Image (cartoon, rainbow, N blue to C red; front, side):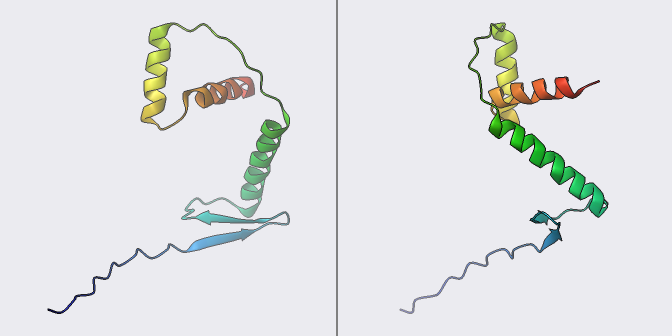
Length: 100
């Protein structure tokens, strides 16, 4: 009896676009937006500033009373979007502070 070789075709890696900035190289996969290089650099700078802010500031443990039903529904919605609910609370706080 002959043994058959089974070959599994691996999906080919998608081509990556490399955007070079004066600060670092950034790889963007399947980026189809029509942003100018200046807009991309501004976006990257903004992300880096937010990242620096988060890494330099200490976190403070707080106790917060929230109605059970509200928290349960909030957690369910976060789970459906695969987002940790405490992270989403922080995101909402940051968005609220940025509003004019």
